[in-house]
Amino acid sequence: MTPKLIVATARGWIGTPYLHQASVKAAGADCLGLIRGVWREVIRAEPESIPAYSQDWSEPSGREDLLAAAQRWLIQKSCADEAPGDVLLFRMRTGAVAKHLGIAAHMGPTASFIHAYTGHGVVETPLSDPWRRKIAARFEFPLGA
Image: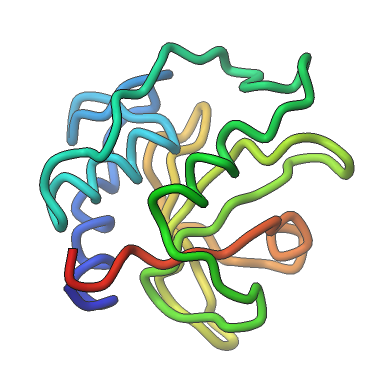
């Protein structure tokens, strides 16, 4: 598995409508559903069943459920160690739980990432400074999985 394959696979999901808790290319996906779909296409079977989750994730409890799941199945790396194909985990507000995911596509001055976003579906978005400030963690898919 290469970063190029991960990015190409994620781009294949662009245009999929946003649908909470869904993970079906061209039919519907949320941000976790996009990561799950790329995992299935590149690695194969998902490593665990995903329980139902609300759109506020675990904000009321303050638990870092999404971060904990990413740490179980992905390889965490330094936020400064940027590479295409990285899974980006975002905190949408300072002090809030991390609850949004995307896949890094381009690096450098034209940096971008692919994500499923409410009201937009799966899109490729510039990784602008406001988005960069929200990155809580960076991961890579397990090599050779």
